[in-house]
Length: 278
Image 1 (cartoon, rainbow, N blue to C red):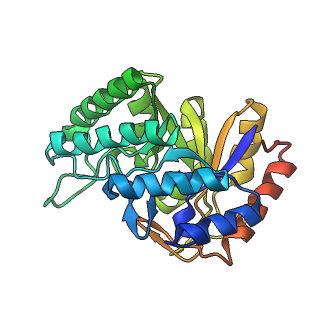
Image 2 (image 1 turned 135 degrees about the horizontal axis):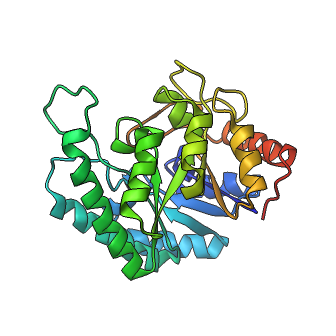
């Protein structure tokens, strides 16, 4: 069973526009990353309270807190970043979601990077383990996204994180487009990480492209992963993150005109693969 959600800030920075478009799309969940161009973890308590009331009034829930946790250099101080992680856990209670999207750190700052993670692997695993233990204690689940240029931007390293941390509070979010953008085979990415995958981000990409494409029209082999997820009895969220007009480290842009096209394209893939929306 696939529940469609959305990074609604790809539609517009204005939450009223976000919700209006999603209602027309028949989508009632949001992966909360930002409103008014302000990240979820930077919003004040009053802003959070106001947005929560707005969601409640419109009948919306969150699939996850779409946090940027882990999008800092691995040699940056851990404690200040851990404080932000604690804020993300607090917001899970506020919004009634048990899920947080996270990442696994950028290379060290101020270095000529040659993709040699060996000197930093243990620190990545340590930090991920600390957060997983905190999440487990709070009844929260973390979904690691395979983002470009982080430790887990390669399928084998995602599997390494999951095996080494070995905590059910840390699972994988699969993003086929991110594998393509990072130069990896999305089928291999799925096969190496599917046993840990409990969350899906719906984004497709053409090799060498500078923005996303309509789901199913790129090189992400989305039908392969979705069909196998159906076969495996997947029950979870499929969060739309199309990036049809571009994307970067802080998010993407699709717009209110194109977002519905991406949703309908994914629905067709899901039906063709024998999946059910719920």
